[in-house]
Length: 419
Image (cartoon, rainbow, N blue to C red; front, side, top):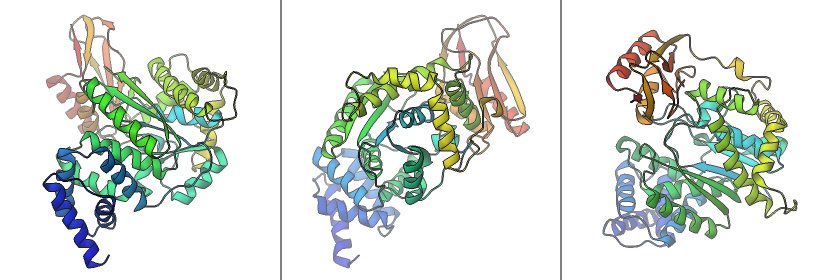
């Protein structure tokens, strides 16, 4: 970049530091410098702190998203392209790997690029990697989706909205992420993925990223505004979340949950199935409204039929095969690590709290997500009655010393509260 253009980026950062609004050309100059790693970590940090402390107005949010997309590669698809995103914050709720094959089985394309775990026990990409490779180029993803209708891949390798990836690295050490940053990050990746119809899952709870409904409403409003600017149809699902929808925490255990739902196993995690069906139904209804399908079709009924009939499972096997995995994998094949320990109730009573943040701490000690077979199985859920010495949860690790450390941690800071 020419020297005067670099100076434009620096001047724009100085301008934002004193609270002034930026034009598209100024924001583009900053994003171009950041995406090509020419700005440097110090100036990038100044921009992140200046912009995300005070926030951006609606026009700046649009400019920022547009510039992030313009400075990186894009996926190319025609027609309706479905997508889903969750603001996250809760482990063991792997709805994406159920939703993607449902949507694809119902005839809509869904190129899902997902994240790896940063501070959580597993990301969707880590869990999908249990059954298939997840690292592909943009052109390879287009080929997979054209062939089987959907994919679940790691977005970090694609280079979509590259400036966003650099800013994320800057923010990680401080665990610093504003609502504006969450919104822009999500929307930039959706635009770059060619999404036309998106369902946004916003779990709200004391251990989620979003802890208050008023904040969820703000995010929903800004997200809907941005989606409109990019001609994307969006359905926002704001939901109170007090516990993990699945029973498994950690890549292998979460993948097992997914396959138990797709296989319709008698002991499948019903809460996970219900949430996946609700989100799939909302996304299908959004897509159906703009398709040639019957206007009488109900999205959630279609989603349920896709699972009950086995079409979603068959589609998942097609996706796994297209991504280079074993299409014959079953839930029973997904076994956790060899070393395990049962955490038992110290008294009789009722499960009144499950600490999601403590689950994350324990699972990271056990080796998640690097040790894909490590993790925790939740034998009991909220409101369950337990007797003394009943098993509350079971923890797994491939390293016996890690298992011992996790046992000691649980003794000092319990995952379950029984009263």
